[in-house]
Length: 108
Image (cartoon, rainbow, N blue to C red; front, side, top):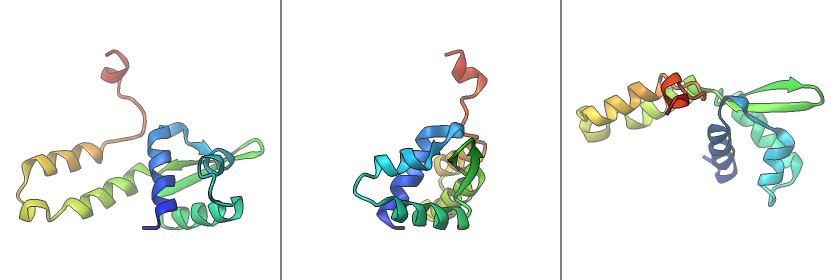
């Protein structure tokens, strides 16, 4: 994966379900031109790893948790030749992620 795209996905994972505006993403990737960032966002959205929504004049991007969970599962599938209960547990837990804290995390 392209380094800029990987950075964008990481930013959006950290941002959680609220996501980030295209402008904030571009500002964080200060070495990239806004048109280049838009290109990366379009490609990530086309790949199904992120989604966009309009809020007023801004376009907000957020991670697509189900797609990212599928990607992690695919990458970890053959870990330990497919016999690692810890990896299996991690894959199962990540598949439940919504980018929002759970009730128990809110009360911690």
